[in-house]
Image 1 (spheres, rainbow, N blue to C red):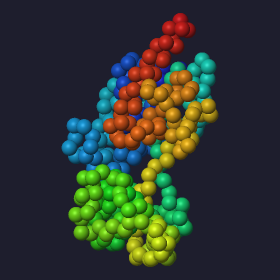
Image 2: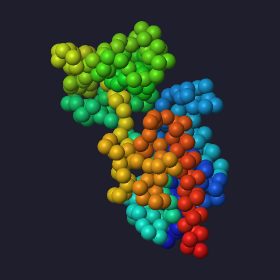
Image 3: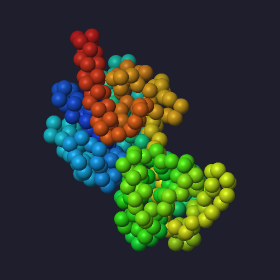
Image 4: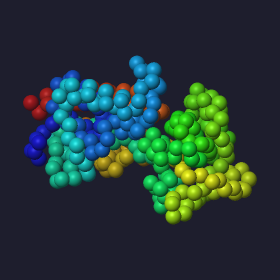
Length: 314
């Protein structure tokens, strides 16, 4: 690897979208490199159980990610485990700048940086991160065995993790700001049937309270009446959605009002040769199978783009 090396495709991000893009790019005989600074698999790697990926009735999130990674490696995909700090569009080629100063060049770039858990931005949240506040039940649930915890959110992740925590804790408060959950019907049915879960609708967390030992309670505000109430809880697990990791999206690429990248059906952005996939891209739903589909689509489109570029310059 050197500053003068020119790739056909550079993939930024090693989640399901990025790894699938790597597989298809290698199958298209493109000179490809995938760059990932953290955990391969992204958010999926910290998911305890996956029940909706075709071909697997049930599989652990980390195990599924390992299968993605090993599959990509089976094509001899080059992988660099370093941090990317900038995407720099160009005329002849695009460039990716790494934190160590290395600059890589490619005809096409596939951005697969994923998303990050949203924060409540409520008093006591940041101060108690790691001291009772968590965004990953499978990562931190073990520390709350036999204790009382609160889960905040109403989507699939909140419901899944409330069910997971109900298996190991004494009690789970499931708090949602609306009067109905957004999560899938099958997960709602499981939540309703779980005696250790107490559902609190129409409520938001006003403050997260703590003492020297960490979180010891939360204060809720009723969204309809404005009334307040306090709950004793030793843990708060927050699942209120994700924000796209769009820091590496270059200026000139169109974003929607919530920061997701706007693409065409080929996953190509408003800058030719730069593609966005997975949780970074605006689309109807964010699912593992859709992220993988994005990776496939972008790689096939990138292959066509690279071939066209080479034919013009030949």
